[in-house]
Each structure stands twice: as C-alpha cells, then as structure tokens.
Length: 208
Figure 1 (cartoon, helix red, strand yellow):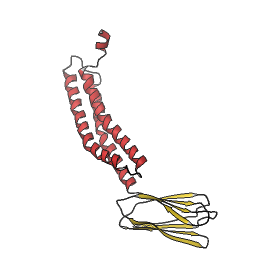
Figure 2: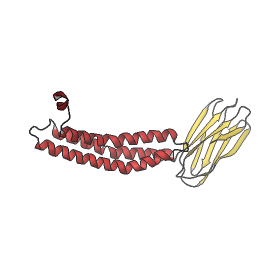
Figure 3: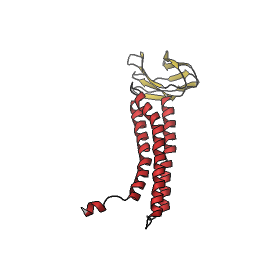
Figure 4: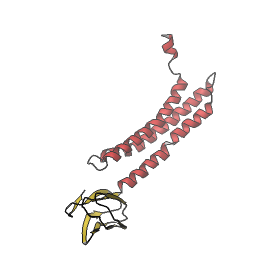
C-alpha cells in the first residue's frame, strides 16, 4: 500500500502532464483526421472527416488554452513548493513551444487539405499497342501538353483551375486524333479525378 501511494504523481506532476496532454491531443487528432480524409476523400463519406476537422479547430483551440492554464498552474505550484523541480523554466518553455506548435501544424494541414481538395487528377492510360504521340489537356487556365506515352504506360497530371470552364482532352496516336471532354464543368474551388484510357482496339474510355 505505501509503495502504491508513493508512486502516484504529485499535483505538480499532474499539472505538467495535463499541459503536455493538451498539446498532444489536438495535434494527434488533427493529423489522424487529415490522414483519414486523404484516404477516403473521393468517397461519399469524405464530408465526415472534413466536418470533424472544422470542429477540431474550435475544440483544439480550447484545449490548447486549457493547456496553458495547466502550465500556469504548474508554474505556481512549482514556485511555492519547498523544492523546485529541476530545470523549471526549461520545462515551461518546452511545454509552451509544444502547445504553440499546434498553430503551424493546423495551418499546414489546412493548406495541404485545400490544395488536395481543389486538385483535379487526370490519369492517361495507354492500353493499346501503339504509343500516344501527344496528349493535351485544356480548360480553366490549364494547358498541358505532354507525350509520348509508351504502350502499357500511365501518365498522371495534377491540375488546379482558376475559373469556370470545361476540361477537354486531345490525344494523338499515329494518324488518329481523339478529341473529348473529360469534365463538362470545372471550377477553381472543386477538385476531382478522371482516368482516360486508350483501349487495345484504340477506343477511348473515360472513368470518373
């Protein structure tokens, strides 16, 4: 019994650990929500982690403020203690930096989420026996020309639009030219993905 009582953390230790937990919790949840959204961002349930992320902005800010209150409480207890904890001010500084690190982490995750959410990914797949000599993607400020694409190869382009338009594609393979519209409407605040395939018989197919 005495050993179990002595192993319990003191109020000073609990206050400092609470501050550290308040720093780690929003950061871990934010990264976890971002990873989950990244995995399912093209599915119908992708809105759920986005809503959770917005709620975490407010909840995480409250938890960080609570962490600073715990840190202030730790500092007050430590200064009144008969024996101060070693490296008191260094511990306070490190915990403060850990709490403040939530700000750049949140900003980085939000920026990455925005660029991924507004990115339109086009995959050109050559399943034919002839190379694709030239591929051109045009629409809403984007004009990409590339090639050749060898038989059996795949090429991917990432597009960010600047306005409202349609996304068109031209594929030249030998004497044959394919002109098609990949997406009838694209805009700067919405991403998506499409796979354009030239089949074995030379026919063009689009899958969203």
